Amino acid sequence: MNFTDFDFHSRIKGGIQAAGYTHPTPIQERALGPALQGRDIMGLAQTGTGKTAAFVLPMLQRLIQGPGRGVRALIVAPTRELAEQTHQAINILGRRTGLRSVTIYGGVSIHRQAQDLKRGADIVVACPGRLLDHLGRNAIDLAGVAVLVIDEADQMLDMGFLPDIRRILGHLPRRRQSLLFSATMPGEIRKLAGDLLTDPVTVQIGIAKPVETVQHALFPVAAHLKTPLLLKLLPRTNAGSVLVFTRTKHRAKRLGEQLARAGYRSASLQGNLSQNRRQAALDGFRDGTFQILVATDIAARGIDVAKVSHVINYDVPATTDAYIHRIGRTGRAYRSGDAFTLVTAEDDAMVRAIDRVLGHRVERRTLADFDYRVSPPRRDTEFTRPRRPSIMARPAKAARQFHGSRRAFQ
Ligand code: AMP
Image (cartoon, rainbow, N blue to C red):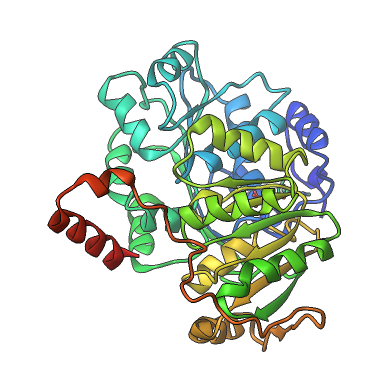
């Protein structure tokens, strides 16, 4: 199948060319036809399958042909990174259409966004909370929306956004085309789909299966030797772009700093960063300034960096879905990649679950030139936080309570 099999407007064909796409990916093959006919779509696809273009292209076609002014398409995304990425895809694919896309998310000036909207937007790519803020101020009118896309619906559910989504739906006209994308289909998403979609075409691509071009390997190691082992592994990544996952924001920050001290061009991406610093870390990773990006699941969800060669799970993910989402960052759209996971004895249950979801026993690897016998330090201080000096000035009882409660949450 070829993109010429679809009757795209010549200006959209130009955008497809500009993006360098020659053949549609499987989800595009199956979703583009019905979406171009105006059908509602339930897309079950993980990130990395080309799902963005599967909804952006038909949306552009409808807007370029259709009547109306003002915001005519709304895309709701769980994270600002995903919103920004989708906005960029629209700018590339729609560059010859003259259609204008605006992003709406928190962490940046609401006034500037309101001004952007005033200047006129055909497409809005938004995160739910900030979109509701704009709706509350009457800064945006969604009455003319002809196409609605809800992207990564299962992530919205995980982040507690479903009530916000339902409130947003109340601002949209009933007659519209709706497309819902989700990697998994928990009961709540099934229900949302039932309420939102009319006679939808379901397009399912490799649900809960990782991208097939990825090689997986597990590296059993004691917790205190993870960083030394990572430093041994990194020279084997052939200077490709490496995305490293940690369990917490704090561990991401610390590991990013440790790698920088070891001489790597590395940055970390975690929720505590300002929007500017997140964008700088992402841009630097994209353009190769940083070889390594250390991130948490939430920070990295949906990030599309085309040439990630290695995903390294410094900490195992909490769920197999999270594993698949992490690994979805490499081997994207026909490229191949490596997925390394450092596992400790405590990760046994997760290791078995990963074996199960991949359908085979994942290769266990040990490095011949690595000393696995180094004993742990008497107290593992690698990731402990520095004590706050101010606490020393507090009465002894308050200090005890403070440290006691902190420990309980670690
Ligand atoms: P997505 O799943 O939408 O995040 O897309 C994953 C990656 O695949 C992005 O880098 C897209 O630019 C790329 N991509 C999407 N469609 C195609 C296509 N038809 N041919 C080649 N690459 C594509």
